[in-house]
Length: 100
Image (cartoon, rainbow, N blue to C red; front, side, top):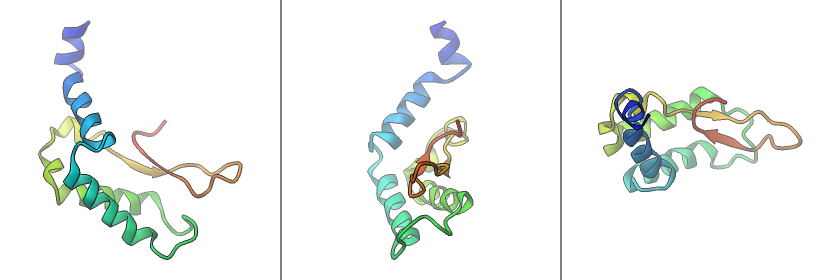
């Protein structure tokens, strides 16, 4: 099972990506992402007018402008950003990750 997870599904690459992206191990990526998100969210009181493609553009820009661009393609192809569906007053939330 472990051989299959490593050879076919690249488990170590994906775990390394989790460390780099979610646990803030890639400082230049996080910095670039925060600057891009700040530019989009500055002056807004809600996420109204911010769409999935806008967040995807900010995410792609952060990847392109940092060392994250050297991650394997099979890892970067799974990196996504999208707005969370608002319900119960949670319209001001966003989600980074693969779609559910």
